[in-house]
Image 1 (cartoon, one colour):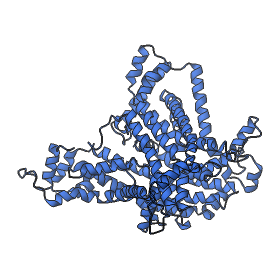
Image 2: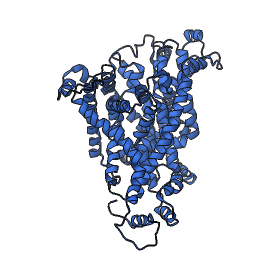
Image 3: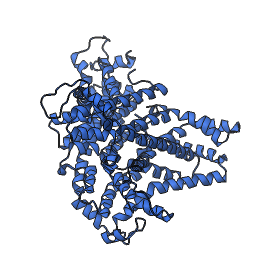
Image 4: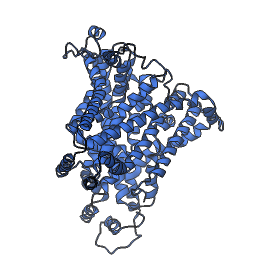
Length: 316
Length: 307
């Protein structure tokens, strides 16, 4: 955009309201320089106020021992960061995220499977597509309560299991060894539909001719999946993997709503929120948030490196 | 990021002609024997399992919502209620659970924040696409970098900003945060704006229209498909949002749908039939919206999610 197109020049001339005047570049009135900024005042103020100010402040707080109220913010250097990496009870909550990372891979595999089979002709295709996608649209609190009912003792899951003869089921949410699996499964139930619809859309945008050519060459279903579908959706799969991993690292809603972080289900974000707002250690919590931000940025960078964007950059 | 670009018209629903063409393609593919009878059986079996997994948790909660307390205590979660017209639990949930307040607050926040997002997002896109000015690249970069920062990580510091603005414990907190953090909608408008020919602007300018009236009378009305997408994505996101109202609007009178329902965990702790009714009251509007707006929702979600 740095080179003005003919249209740009004409547009600028037009704002003189004398479009037929001879063109004189560089004779812009101050009002015309201001016009775009009049449109941008509100969005830029909001952007700065709610993205850049918080990020800057967060970095600053992370080097203090501020409690969130005290007018004085005493600098403490790297103490908060040292605390995060040396106090095991803070850093080990990241291991809880591993359940969700594993869940994310199950979710992507299921999404890929259903997207592939539904991309071929299927009876009641739209019905299946709608049902698989619908959970993604639901309110997180409603999902939390639905699954509390599903997993509770003598709840839906236990009743289903007793139909097949399992009469002493484990405590799905009470047993610390199982609870994170139950919560991660809930997360898979909730988010699978989005990946599924994204993959299905990508598969359906593959030109039909490729399949026909492959058939002429005698390719089977598996060959077509491997040589046509998979390369065709490589990019969206790569993006989904990264989004799923960042999502798994910053998981909050499902465990907070269902167990409140009790029983070994506390995640890094729950820990950050309670550190800041329950224990008033804003300095330490900010350092935790900065660490999470860096981890998420690292994964984003990784994705951009492995799957470079072939689209025109918005800044160009 | 890429899904948007690989398809030529990300926000517009496929035309009827296109759908018909896709239908014809499908038939070509159907004619080819891809799966044997065993494969086909396995395919439908897996689909029915998936449908069961998706629906059983919801249907059992729906059934529980119609049961009386005694009935709930004595029947299995898999048993249907004796009376499908017993709305007592819904009434209790709605009246005692403060869901009316929740719906009112959610509606206010939704209408104001969605309107604000549409106006702000389209104005930003107009300024960035139709003007060439000093600082344009910087503004674009500012929005681009902001997409990298997950909002969940910055709440600790955002809280202090909201507090300093005097917005803590007001609906204003949720409204400004929903408007101020929405970069996805700016991108949707920007993508769509590029498909609107500039000759329209120029023609209007020759007729003496100023930049604001071009935006308001020519560009904005043409953005309708993009506006529909943004309204749907944003509306669903606000309806479902839990974190922001929970953190910034703790007062009982300011409960939204999510936080009102979350509070059911305390007072109705053991009354599962009431909790079930509350959850259904929240889910049913989403179901209706999905059935009515299905195609728009698929399009909107796919263009919003990959940003």
